[in-house]
Image (tube, rainbow, N blue to C red; front, side, top):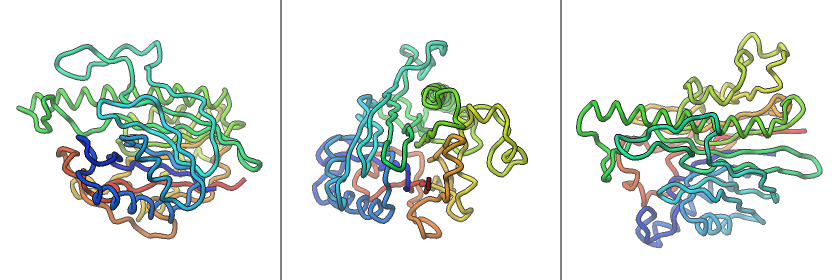
Length: 318
């Protein structure tokens, strides 16, 4: 079984404020996305940036066989949300958006009230077949792309840039705490017994502080001396599969010409034992061709086919 995560980049039907300007551009985008998903052939794909639920239905209709769509009910101000495309039915077990009760509201701008919720919902489902039984969560944390109000993507001065960089970091960290809180519930106290995978666009790299929040107790990351030494922390840990991805594939986006891995798959100890391979793009490829994106208005790519992210995937065998 192949599990994956993919930011579909502005998946809207045409004619709105954020989607393709015309039907031809929309159909080209769907065709490109469908070709990649067909080559990927996932059993379960966590998706981000679904702007119109109907657009995900359109995409599923272009894929061979029967596909199911499951979406969070909590969208951001642009209407984008997370969800799943799956070959098998899934059962929703959580659709969280509020920060944990102990976490205070965070500041997100120079003015206005602090927020007490994630920008987009965090959706969790149970997958149950004769061979597989596990829980999967999908998320999309706050972007590092800064917007300054009034439609501006450039600051008035460096003080404003610094403040809004901090605001974005505050929110992304709080959202990471919220994802970790949901993961704790899915682990049911012992990830050595329960199979859990967290998929998503974390909008930062493996070593980032916000990404590290999701791991739980430190000390057993893949490739470290502690990895093969069981300890009590294994019950609560999640393992980022990034070190299992071949080095030449270890990126999911290109920002200002620099390759970075900001989309991730994290698994519990019991599921990690069943991971046989991990990668980005399409299995069998050595690298993925992606556009280089910068800190500009995302609407500039509204007519672009495909996505500016590569899928990240793992293959599991039970």
